[in-house]
Length: 143
Image 1: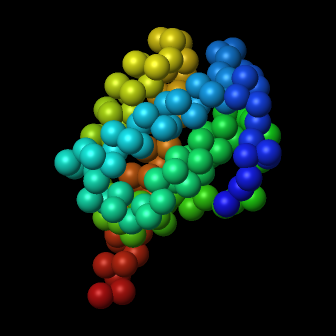
Image 2: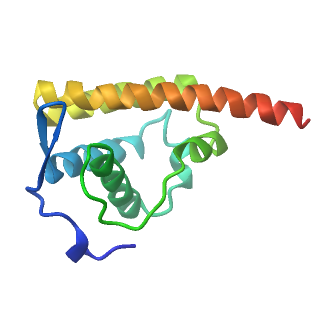
């Protein structure tokens, strides 16, 4: 997907609402989190579509890096709404996902970093739920 020469320095820093994250903070959270997702009894089903966990972790580290204002270093596009809809992701699964993410972030980051990141997670979660409901309604009309 990408060679490691294009990755930011692990100590490259970005500021989000006055809270500093380094690239390695983001990688450590994403890596630890998705290792938990892969074995979580509720989440592993929808995530069975992931064929290459290291690549998935790399892509999601990049996703969060650019969401926080970091410079893109991979040539990828993201369509989380469609991907989550196709796997049958639900509001209940999103609650499990969010709780697991909160636990992971809080165990690795400072409280202010974890709180800042969770503001993004919750906003994206609301958008996913809303759009998931719209897509359900749209597909029900086709039946």
